Amino acid sequence: MKGLIYKDILLTRKPLVMAFVYSILAAVLFFLVRLSMICGNLANSESLPSLERNMYIFHYVPCIIFLCALAGNSGDMYSDDKTGWTKYIRTTVITPRQIVLSKMLSKTIILTVAYVLSLIYIVILCLASGDSLTVNIIGNITALFFAAIAVTFFSVMIAFIFRKKQTTEIIIMGILGGIGFAWTVSLLIKLDSITNVSEDFDLLDFFSTEYGGIGQYLLIITLLLAAAATVSCYFASVKVIKGREL
Image (cartoon, rainbow, N blue to C red; front, side, top):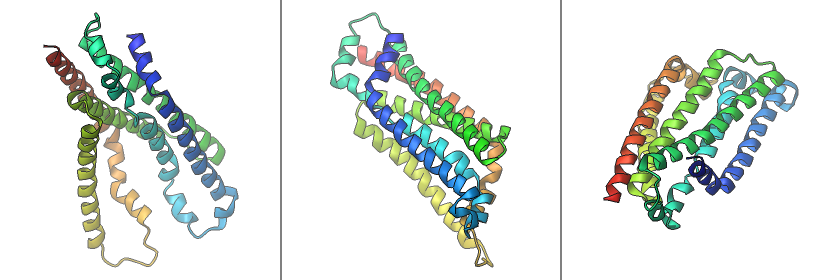
């Protein structure tokens, strides 16, 4: 099992390194902007009040970047077929359960690293800027971690079923695109229904007011999604692999 996990991580080491570098650069950028709000060019900017009211941008966007960047690569799912590893492994004592578990564990390890990096970022940001590090912030970052787990395991399951990168990407993008389209239409309808819009209308304030209430349920929702994705990924993927062995 350890060898399988090491193999999966090793196959994605180059994309992971690049994702790590870009994520760090993004985190540094947000960090510098936050410092500029305190003692830099933004300290006297007209946009400062809006940014201060919407600190979630600096708290969570870099964490989302960490999780998406490090979990986004799934090259190991398709290199197994290209290199003939999938056929070779059928001649060994390795079981379908071990194959699936190794994929899921390797993804979980990578996501856990991204989660830890997110926590390190938020601690450094709060210490440097004087922001309060609350349980709610940690809970929201944990919710993002569970959401990333859910999406990643669903992607792994789809990859095991269809085995083609293009097909998997079309399905994932189709689902996410459909959700994004429905959300955008709903958002536009809500914005259009707003009357007496003042000249100082702030879209960021609208987002925080409109969706801020979801935060108290976000952790439990994403935890349930992660649990459902884990169970579905494991049993469906094992069944698919066993079916191909027949």
